[in-house]
Length: 344
Image (tube, rainbow, N blue to C red):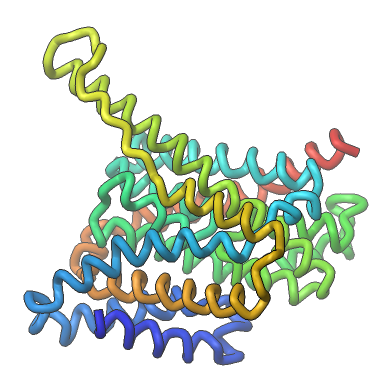
């Protein structure tokens, strides 16, 4: 655990550098990169002694970090973007995850866990969503890292592409009546990480950045219902698989629902935070602690990630990530236009 803690501290310090912040590289991203570097050089020599602490960081501390993540959100955030923003987030989340699962398993031949992790990361909130989905899928460290890599690559590209799209639209009027607020909703509903959303929005205007981050936070809040729904879906599939093996009709066979209790705790923290009776200093310190816990989890993940396994995964996950990125930009723009027109 000391190793994970040191990685987290270094990553947080590096993540505060202006250059990395300007390029949407959060402390979590830096932590996993540092973990991978150490995990493929020095860590294997003492992995046997540090394995239990690393596993605790990846699992227990991860869940604690997801729960405390709720302190960054309030129910009021939903009202800030209105019905249109909520509908746009919901439609893009469900369509992106479904597209990732279908293309990943049917077209690219990826395993289901990798496809779902890539889908969760692209559909919701990047690395945090991948890490939160991992316990339900019981995924391997390499599968998680491959999924996070797609978020890092295409989320970073989005930081530069989205401001260019805004300027292009100003000159060519490809999409009429798209102001800073509308583009903020578009960016927040389609870019992967919160840091990447802020970096892209801030390149346009402070108003765009504010709207984009609020829209993104509403999208983050959908992580809890997503995890609960995914848990039920996985339980149903396992029940059917057990029924097929036993030759029964599937009633009462292998029907075990993995309840993501940390998702309920996440919602509870959001609700409590919405009442604003917690001291601001306490909330600020708790958010700092949350960043530290999540960075520890990401660093531990990097330590147990083998580059040979990532190379073995090949180019297919990146191709899937590219298609999802194209869908988020193109399909996301269409959904934004249709929903905004319907609501208003």
